[in-house]
Image 1 (cartoon, rainbow, N blue to C red):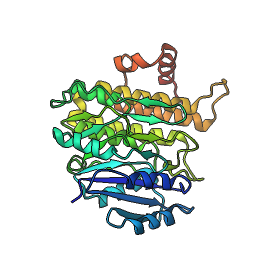
Image 2 (cartoon, rainbow, N blue to C red):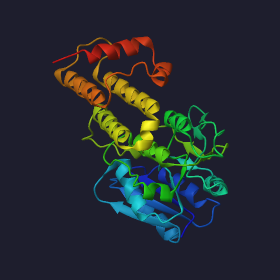
Image 3 (cartoon, rainbow, N blue to C red):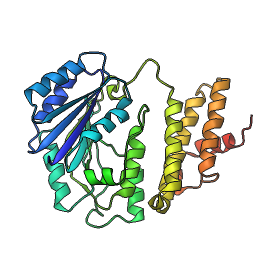
Image 4 (cartoon, one colour):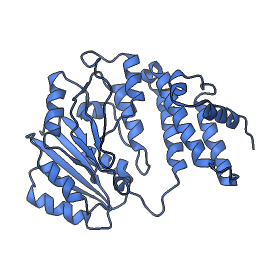
Length: 322
């Protein structure tokens, strides 16, 4: 059994794919497997994957999906195949430093952590996104600490997850949508007992060009549909998960942020009148939010990051009827 399984969804990224795969094969951790999932690419990505599998069959497993399911569906296919004690994720247009998974794994086993995080380096802006403060890492997570993790806006790809955490809690990605990371991370944080960090960045996020790992198709739904789907999923988690109820202020703040984003998908900055479809979508997302909770703009986490104009706008939208 490998120590770590690394899952890489691949879609139409032939120009950047070799760089990613070379960085995987350069990993210093022994006993590691790489599960490369071709998400119905239409370029040469699949052929590149097969070439690398021939070069390193003891470490590389290639899965070919004939129907595109976006990043979430491709990652689920990888989860079905993964056999490692821990699981990591890499996006195929990014790359990683050689000791990434050795550092994350050593940290994870040092104190039986369920999740270990690391900083993210962003090319173009040459900036580093730090993970949340790890001052609480040596003890079982308390509700307030889970709330901090929920609010931290972290990344799937900088983390290492204990595979039993994902398996035992049946944590999966939603296929065929964007924003699939958010509810996966929420479920993982709600299920985890211990959380750790390393302090040096190991993951390089390529901030050039389009995000190919979204598996963008010409028949893509608009942004609103993805936000609406995520809003509904968060509402389901809040209502059905007992640990979520202990962290409801943070989860409700996240829901309000999704609601706010959905609003700005429907209205126009230049004051142009909304179309009937946009107005219908606005009411749809308003009702979805109200099905979770009616009041809540006094949420301290939400108020801390949202200006009064936006909150007033949201309150006015609550009064619209058609």
